[in-house]
Length: 97
Image 1 (cartoon, rainbow, N blue to C red):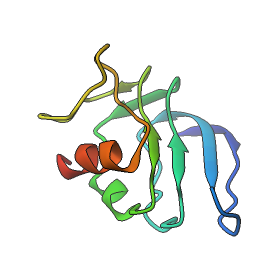
Image 2 (image 1 turned 135 degrees about the vertical axis):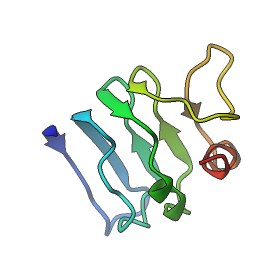
Image 3 (image 1 turned 180 degrees about the vertical axis):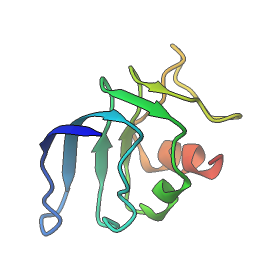
């Protein structure tokens, strides 16, 4: 997996991570303080890992514009994207993993 940028601040409120990667989604399960995770517009592929369920503080999760497999019964935006911009939407998506 190629990571070209990784910015993580786990000590600050409103943690934001934006990365540029190719391949499967990296393991973020130990980063339970994440509030926002933007993985869109990458060359990610494969399945969305169940380990994302451990990120209970997520209020934003963007997975659109990738090559990821869409989980069965995943709630999608009106344009078919995996874009979740509030806690309830994120929780609904993570529940189908």
